[in-house]
Amino acid sequence: MSTLKVVRGFSKTFWLANLMELFERWAYYGMFVLLSVYLTDPISKGGLGFSNIIRGNMQAVVTGVIYLLPILGGTLADKFGFRKVLLAAFVTLASGYYFMGQFNSYGLVFATFLIVALGAALFKPIIVATVSKSTTEKNDTIGFAIFYMIVNIGGFLGPFVASKLRDLNWSYVFTMSAIVILFNLALLYFYKEPGRKEDEKKESLGETLSQIFLKMKIALSDYKFLIFNIIMIGFWVVYMQLFFTLPVFITQWVDTSDLFRSSSIIASTIGTVENGIGIVRPEQIINLAAFTIILFQLIVSSLVMKVKPIVSIVFGTMVIALGMGQLTFQSYGLFIVLGVIIIAFGEMVSSPRIQEYVGRIAPKDKIALYMGVSYLPVFGGNVFGGLLSGSLYNNMSDKYEFLKQELFERGYGSLESMQNADGAILFNDAMEFMNMTEVQLNQFLYSTYHPGNIWLVFAVIGISTSLLLFLYNRFILKN
Image (tube, rainbow, N blue to C red; front, side, top):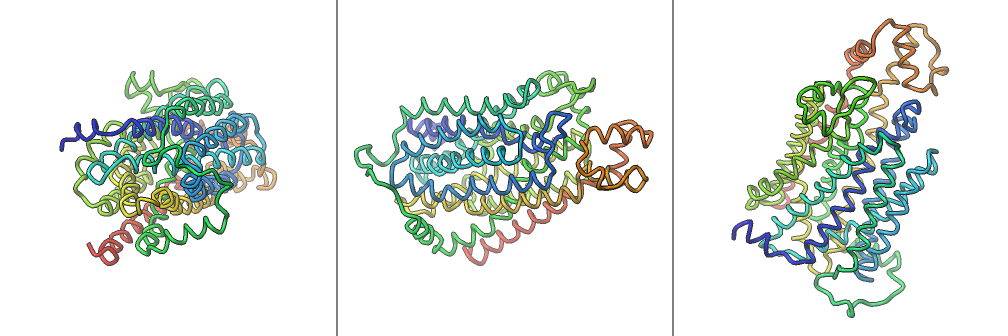
């Protein structure tokens, strides 16, 4: 059967679920891709001025919650029906996004980010389960490829629009996310859960906590599923650095003026002028991964259709690790783009097959539960990835921490006196003190402290994960 015939065969519910996913990803990535920069940029530059350790801890906890609570969300969806839980998710998400942009203290930003996490956790397993229930083993590879392409269309549109809005005011980024989520409330009117009639849904007060953990235990009693989930933590630790670490790294270290000058189309569409210099902001560079996936996901998935999902995951993980490693040696925009595109191809080969693999091994009456449990490694990857991103970046890559150390060694002042200084203001003072231009000071700090070494750490984690998956396939699955 040709790919075109497969695509035409999908139901209206399948396409509606994909459209909901598009809007939800638009809202989430529109906020999330810019979040690391927003949290850590100096206050004088419009950010919140949090340290990278604080930023990493926040992202670890909140994104961990996003991927832990789908266990609850999937169970509630199976019990109450998908539509009711989707309604709760959309209301929660819209309110969380809006208020997240209204606060600037750590505690309030943290709290509203947690509200977003709750809404996202309710939404995730339902939409994936809808796609899974709307496909068969004959078309699930293409079905999940379409789903993943839609994810990336939303993931592309969100940061692209948000990057323009942050020039006006950072709060507009979060307002945009809230408004986009409201579109899904209108779509919910047309949604019907596949495989179950509305009048078959039971009204109940819900599952008790003990019942939820009992169901999770049942899913994890499948030892192959359990081992797979444990290994996949490494995959998500590495992949999430595209959003946790790379935006800050580009902001602090990468000269993107070469990208701006490379093409008038690039300059006019994703470029911006800052302090009289044409640059391309990190969210637009990272967005090229989503754009690459939009262009090539169906082609790549068609090529790997006959390859076993686990083999695709092994190969894709290795490609992502190589893309991360490539970032070690680069501080110019064009080379960072190359690394991002390499990572995107690794993602295309591996990530859609993860959901396909889980959908295939799950009993049909427990798909939402298995999909919910399959977010455990994403939870672990986000927690460990966030903690590593914050602590490693602070020690290995933070420009302002290096600057403080350099100024201290040159007798400018004590580390204590510079501890709470605004990084951008301190950098300007250092330029005068050290008699260097901005470019010269950046290059001096880069060549002296080697901030790119952080990517070697994540590359090693990725390669190790790929090797463990290979051994899993060879000795556990015995393929």
